[in-house]
Image (cartoon, rainbow, N blue to C red; front, side, top):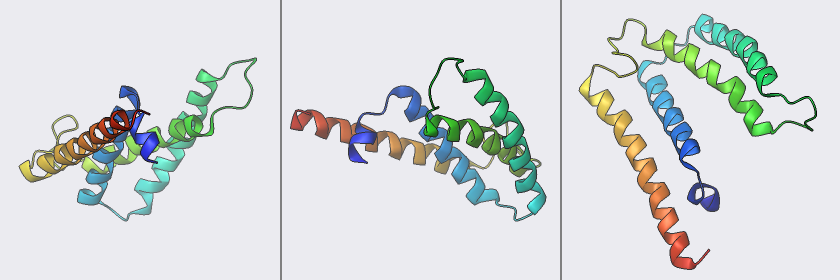
Length: 127
């Protein structure tokens, strides 16, 4: 795991920050209503299949399982995020409550520092 995080390209770092932001939002605004989660699963299935078809190559061998997982996870996260923040005073994707905004930004910053420290340690070891 250490090597994985030390070698993350910028795009994957951004995806991890998106996931952190999403998880903090879910923790702050969790709603156990089955409708939110079932609708999000349905949207995930429909959009995930469309995304999978859009990146599929005719001559390609088996798809990357992590890429496939992300293609289905992203629409699930987007739809459930939208449902959870409805009426919560968000401006775009930013919470209006300073504490919540600070926590979201802070958690992403901690992750970035974690990755940078692992990279520095890796360079120090000559890997």
